[in-house]
Structure formats: structure tokens, C-alpha cells
Image 1 (cartoon, one colour):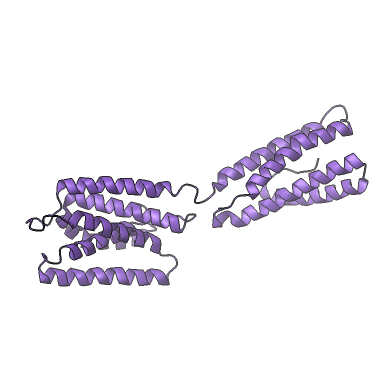
Image 2 (cartoon, one colour):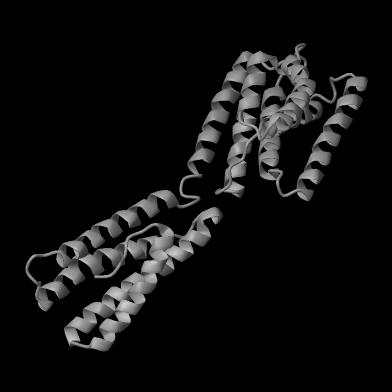
Length: 292
């Protein structure tokens, strides 16, 4: 809501805000205006995150749309009290702004339409809450302080609930990648220790080591990593490559264990060829060789 994609983006939002802001502050008061602006902006951000969980959105458009939503609510709620010239002028401006920007948003994939709709909807609902009064004969158009405070608290609760729904929309891919890398580091350290032993290790001990300290932890870590369901689109290609890489390593190590157990030179040769392939992939990833 505070970050923008550049000076032009910031300039456009400031110009629009200068057009609608003073009017809405006069209608709602400073506290009501601030509450509406921030609530609509946060609602737009939540809408954006729900629609595009892996994308990073910037700009105050959701908050600005919220002001126009509130203006629309004000015009509708006070249509019997507002002077005709005011109603005619701002009703047309509001409809034009909303319709034009929604149509323009549909034509450009870079425009975050979800943020616009989230802010617009939140602004309209809060505008109704701030402007619908049991006492229609009241002289002031501004909402009462009690109504403003109640709307602030209510919007805070609603936004908190909405924000809580964002948890788990996407997998924490960097965290999962670090876990896999840590297991790989431990596994390869076990292999280096076995290869660097002063006395040759027996086949039975080598098989036991490979099964308990290499295959088992790697199989568990790989299953967790490959089982991610909500990988961000920006990382999906790398994730698929790493799953393939990890699977080849697992198969290569398993063939090596089977070859030693059965004293089958062909299986050992196949495992070495497979692990050589993973070594080439590992150099591309910056990882360590996989040869036992």
C-alpha cells in the first residue's frame, strides 16, 4: 500500500487521491477518512494475496478504490438528502472511475484487479456502515464518533480474520529448499567419512551405513520436498529439476547398495553412471558430488 512501482505509478495515485481525498475527508471526518483509507488498502492487499499468492503487489490503488466505493455508498445512502447538483456530478464521476478502471484492468494482466475489487468492496461496505443512520433527521452528514470507532474495530476484526487466511496459501519454498540442502550436506558428510576411513570398511558396515545414514534421511527429505503442493510459480521449474535430481541420487545410491549386497558389478556400474549424471546436475546447482 505504501510501495509503488515507480514515480509515474506514485504520481497517478497521488493525483487521484488529491481529487477524491478532500471530499471524503469532509464527508467522513479525519478519523473516519483515515480508518476507511487504511482498511480499504489492507482489504485490497488481502484480495491481491488471495488471488495471486506468489506475486508481489505494490501501490495504493486498493485504498483509492475504497474511497470511491465509500463515495458510492454515501451517494446511495444519502440520496434523499444530497443536493441534486452534487449527486449528479459525483455519481457520474464515481461510476466512470470504477467502470473505466475495471475495464482497463481486464485488458492488462499487469494491473492487480483483485486489489482494486477488494478495496472497492471494503470501501462500499464501510461507507454504508459509516453513513446509514437510524436517525435520518440528523443535520450533520458526518458519521458520529461512536460509529467511526465501531467501524474501525469491526474492520480490524474482519481484516485480521482475512489476513489469517493467507497462511499456507503458498509453500515456504526457500525454507524447504534449505532443509533439503541441510540433509544433503549431512548425507554427503557421512559418505566422505566412510570413504576417508583409515581402515577399509566391510561391505556389511557400508550397507548398514548407506541404509541408515544416507538412504533413509534422503528418502524422507526428498519425499517432503517433492510433496510440496503450493510451490510459487517463480520457483516451480527449479523445484521440478531438484526433484528429478534428488530422485536420481536416491536411485543411484540404492543401486550401489544392491550391487554391494548381491556382489553384482553390473548394478554397481549402473549406480556409478547414474550418480555421474547427478554430479553433472549438482555442479549446475552448486552442490557436492554424489559418488559414494
